[in-house]
Amino acid sequence: MNMDRRRVLLLAGATLLAPVPARAAGQPLVTVYKDPSCACCGAWADHVAKAGFPTTIVEEPRMNAIKVRFGIPSALWSCHTAEVESYLLEGHVPATALIRLLAARPSVRGIAVAGMPVGSPGMDVAGMEPETYDVMAFGSETPNLFMRFRGASPIPS
View (cartoon, rainbow, N blue to C red):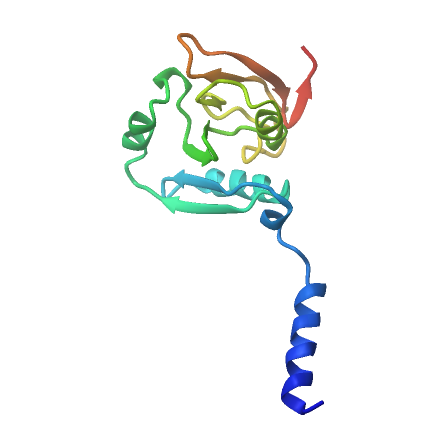
């Protein structure tokens, strides 16, 4: 076997043994639209990535226009918006809710956490107790409860 052939085989073997990225495991890409000056949005994207979802961030200074274009109800607006497959995510949605959304595949446009609740993913504030907040499903006439959380922990309904 010549040296070039060995090198090709070694590289091929190393490629097969390399860690497989989350996307190869079937997790869909999450595209996050955020204002360039917002740090909590990046922290939320990190939370989603740690849950195994590949993420890409689109810096967008006109976030209101994005929300209007996607048809997100203004009462549910937060600081960032994300797309994953055919769904929208608005605000600090925990990865647990995203996983449930993708497993259940309900007939909704998306899920949202309105505002910026303390203790939600990306909104950890030292010395402050996490808030209880709702993840709302939207896309029908009236948004409805999808899940409830205290901090990053789901509360059984």
